[in-house]
Image (cartoon, rainbow, N blue to C red; front, side):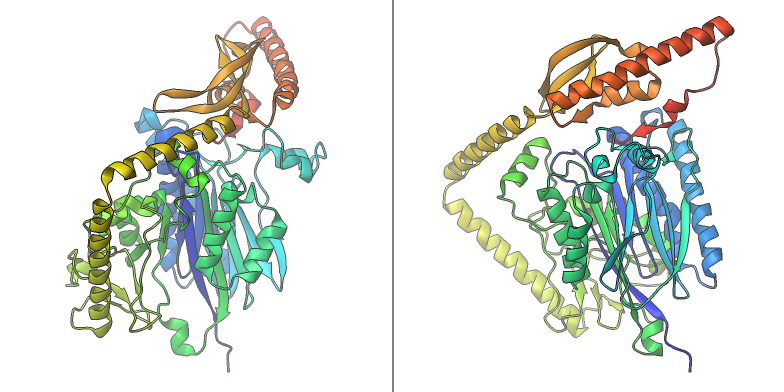
Length: 537
């Protein structure tokens, strides 16, 4: 008798973080495919690039009848297609020029793991208590480590640790991903993440949490929270995957979960639902204490959208709920049906084909329930649906009552407390910012700035500490782009140290350009090799 196949469970959490103004990461956690993409390219581009990559890979969720090698080829083809789509969109819309994204994607096929990645988003495998890194970063510091110029420990604090050498997007870079295939074993647990997480958490910490937190969603929530508390200044996205043996033949074939979307891709779930021809759900947001000092500091840098206080159902509006994505209030929590702990009320978007086949569309009043056997139901006569409606109505009543109580206590007192909290948070945030340094451009020369390269409500959080005599125009375009965005360093001493290689680069580039001009009066169309690097903003 043939052994039962392995089945996959997954979950994901994506959070904007405490510094960024928007979430440029995207994630997909399905029954067969899991992927994390870290977008880059400014305010308008990064989220677009990562969403395009998710949509290009999503169809792999439903592919059947392909062996592991065939799946590896399919993943490569889909990732290159994502690259072409990103480049094409950037050419059509000039404001998106320079956008790109990393990709790390994992697919189970015939009890084999097929892993593809490009960029510095990582995949870790926890097997029999041992944490194995499944990917190698396509980054500048990894190149320095590989060539023996720095140690892995030095790479963690290197000033250029955010410079990636290979990504998808509007760059003159090879878009082919690295692909590996390995045997899947029961109990294998994978973690896919953006560098907002692995850039601040040690491998030992990641192993401890993966090993000690059985629930996938709780594990993802805990790791994202730990990354933010450890000082991550980027978006933080994670997907957790686990393989286990099917209980019987029926268990091996029935659906176990609705695919989850996180980050930028969750803002428009309908196209992905249509691509995989299956319902998709918005991943739960990060849940944490809104009164923490870090959260108050984040509120000064950007405003999080909040759920409509008048809504009585968190799951029934696929349109408006999806538009908010995981940037809804972190206080919102999903309550399952008391009739069965396995039933979940989700923000589900159905594919258009389901409506065409006569399925009942979401009404904004009746929630869709995923039952313990994997079936979706919005039948108002179903006992679990009735219970879910009762829970939602109870939540709305409690919310309305709480609103009245808060109003009666006095709006004036609340306003004063809010002003005081914002003032304290602003002072603390400003002091922290003034302990930071970065290199940038001022009056055409390289300069050392105190603060961070951003502003709040028009108020700049940095000032020029010292100007150098290095002309920005003497540097290669890649260095100029990095200086325009700001090169963060840990201290003033580190800034001085970083000036030295920049000065050497400027002299070398100026001399090289002078030689080219002498050798050939006609301008060359080729780019400098150093311009092939790109730094994530």
